[in-house]
Image (cartoon, rainbow over all chains, first blue to last red; front, side):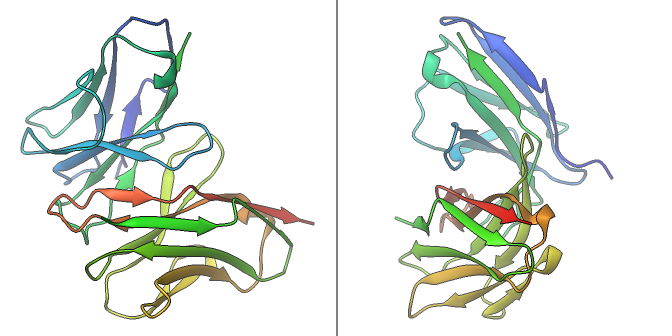
Length: 114
Length: 114
């Protein structure tokens, strides 16, 4: 059973560019959450998708947007990249949303903005 | 609002010694608590979670954590450290809303000396 997968593993962009990160959830999971982990910090919640809708959003600007497809896979898009967007972006999936559900994390996409 | 504080950004123990990683939480409702481990250049792996079934929670790789409501703590322990335990450890509390977004502490780096 494949776990959460993310692509690409690494990415280098320049300021002002746009980037799209992809995530495939664990088999059977319908909820996908995205987190940003800056170097030396704990992950910060960006947003969560369930049934192709954004259910909750963290404290991130509108430059960060996402999408969930009918097969539950998800994309994270970041426009007008800033140097401060350099981070590890983690995708997590769960069987359902709710505070008791375990979120399973992918290996992450490391984004470097120059 | 929920929050998590991990006391000690770096902990160093000798191989075979007791591991104790501290986590205190703040929550206005009964919390769901998690410990995750992150090995270098990898995503997060769940060690254990507390969902109010039992105050002493056993996880993978010999780790366990005890929920103490009076102390608002959920410290992680392992009786005997192994070299392979060297990693970054994150404590997280689940948001009480319907999405269960995770709120992470800053993390504790565990070093195991031979």
